[in-house]
Image 1 (cartoon, rainbow, N blue to C red):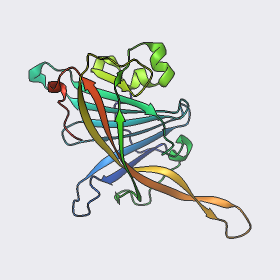
Image 2 (image 1 turned 180 degrees about the horizontal axis):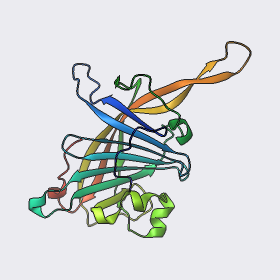
Image 3 (image 1 turned 135 degrees about the vertical axis):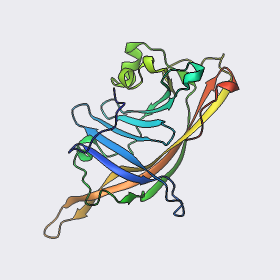
Length: 225
């Protein structure tokens, strides 16, 4: 169900990531990166102190990317265990392929990771709410229905593929960051002869602000993450 964190293995990389690019702030969190060559996917996820789970699933086969935010519900308000939003967009090519992710290793697992490059801010207007038609979801990613199951109260939003709903007149915004991820492979020249060999990875950071419509501003109950 893509909900649990991975355990150390040959296919899963667990890193400690600095939560803020400001060097005066030492807060960090654990992040899991899982590559799967069979499904051609890469999963990046981390948990916050309040129990929120932030996940990004990149589907290389369908060239799509799904960002899911799961926030614990409030039992006294009779809310489900988790409330979630899923944002679907096209894959922008800012991640190494699953086969390369599966080969990543750490010499010093306790090292606090800081990205080499800041890719800046991305704003996505997700004005379209997707209907839960298996055919429609599969057209974006065959993993979408499992990654964002309706039983967990997830709402799936996209920037295309559906008609805009004029009844949703208020705009909410939600900002999340992925502070460290392998965005490219590095190649070095061979010492003897021509050609190059792979000699590492380039790491990046990015933040996304998702804007999406709701019927009332009171429904903008998501804190900035």
